[in-house]
Length: 429
Image 1 (tube, rainbow, N blue to C red):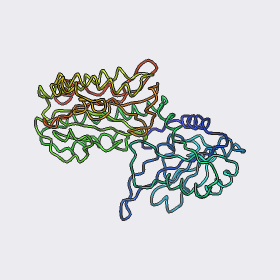
Image 2 (cartoon, one colour):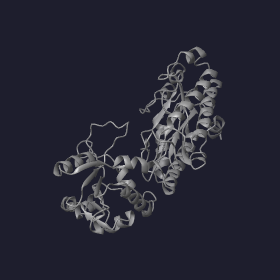
Image 3 (cartoon, rainbow, N blue to C red):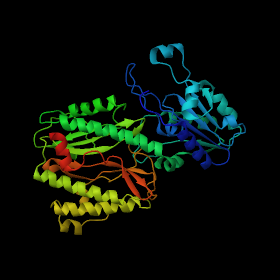
Image 4 (cartoon, rainbow, N blue to C red):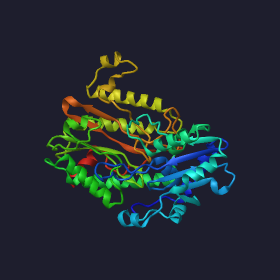
């Protein structure tokens, strides 16, 4: 077993809550991801679709979850369909989950082979009035590749054109945004593994190492601790590359006097960690580097104090912008005239801090959640202010993962070196 699985009670609870949100006689379908091909007979590593994982815990391709709370027969209210192991499949790729495995992992008792899906769905559609199909409305989603979910949705719509179609994703945005205790524990494990990777890298970095060598050090530590690797493509940007927000080439030499921006996070059990640290190649920050670093650190500490239940995300980002404006004035990167002539849509601080301060994190590194709703206990956000000065070849971003609680917050990365002195100590002991 690669990672410690969460209890089936979590998935039973998640399905129960979702089922109560469906309309009367609503039937909902959720599909696993495909295994995506590369070329010849190559394939990418499998990554499960987050929604079906959230509702079942099944981490296997060719799987479908059917929920029909108002089905006449109790056995039809929750069904999982999955691939049946053949002798040839077992020899070449290993045996797939048995029905008993799936029952134990998910709490769903009715498990069927995928070959029976069309017949059972056809029988149940005679009882259903509303067909809930899932989609991906994430504001950052942009893909020309057709997913299994999109392909199957189109096929089922064509087969049942007279049924009313509804969307389940808005419900999942509400549910997944509020993490349960066992989910937060899984995220803490991902953060702990990320810390181990940083500790290793702090001892490894010196002038002349390549960015990809640092990436390899993280990967080594992640894999040996039960992670399947990075939760997202890592950013290892030294010197001017730290000012490129989505720099992923990681192919340059780390030179004496430069600062390296490390935006990395381990996944564990499909949950993501998302950390950013900045470290001096030579083991010590210059006075200027330390001043910029401490400015970002100051904004981060103040921003975390704003992460509380009831706070509007819009108001939060506005307040963080004001915090950053004061720091940029102190650093003399902007002046009072810049602030006086700024427009609401393009505040002066955006010249050096272009991105948002926080995003939801969970099963996806940019996890789902409703941005128009106030923060609530159980939300997990990153907190990641940054200052990027291309003309100085210096980019500083600091990032931790924060759980909103009833009376404040918990920092899942509080044990990871963060202050400039702690980073230097980690490099020089």
